[in-house]
Image (cartoon, rainbow, N blue to C red; front, side, top):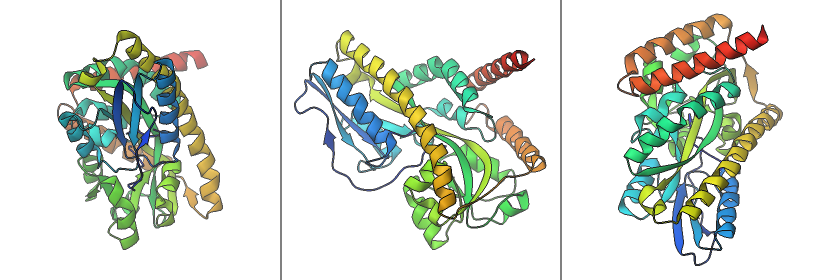
Length: 340
């Protein structure tokens, strides 16, 4: 589901018909996502679903509800609990209401490269899987939106510029809200589907998205100035109902796990390629890119540190944050030694 999470997540709220990957399977998983039909996220999910159907002889199939027709992340989760859905592609901000520790990778101004993200994510995956399992959810794969940037209706390169903006924060996202409030910025909380209309009406004039996501959602048309310094990392997760998953045979479960490893790894590569290609597309559409100074970034990192102190133990556990810190420190030390 070419997603994940966003920061955050970057997804279109529009109506599409459900798509059955297998006509009459013995086990039909109804899967929902905010990701729009035709995006890399949904296309990759279909490839995954087709492989699972083929390798299980049609015994395991999927009906996909893309484009938010089953509601936002919270609505999707409620429908999973009620048995109306058997899984979904969730944004980080949405599912973190249920699994707070999953939001830890979204700390602003934390990661310097995708290599860092991949290493840390691999180290934390067992903890994430455990947290989801405790809530009756089967962790299948991490999905990705990518590095997100500040999009605005004018250049925003200083703290003063940001303080003058009407800035969006994802609803129920304590990381973004607390970080912005530490700079005396009062964020305007909205769900992802409400952002474009709010940019159009002027309710907000500044938002965070990946380069590819800004095209998919058309946010760049109302916020054509990009602060060319990554604000943070946005991602998501593909989950199945543990109850439904456990009804499968061991072979069927292994087929799903193997297919997910292949297709969702490829999805992350495709998402990153789409983000790279989107930079040129946005420039051709007249979008302006300008980077923040090192001094401004240092100030932002200071606000990041104060945000971490304030939220550790509430927005995410001390255990998951310490595991993240250890993994990131190990990665940076290894690469520093290798460079020397």
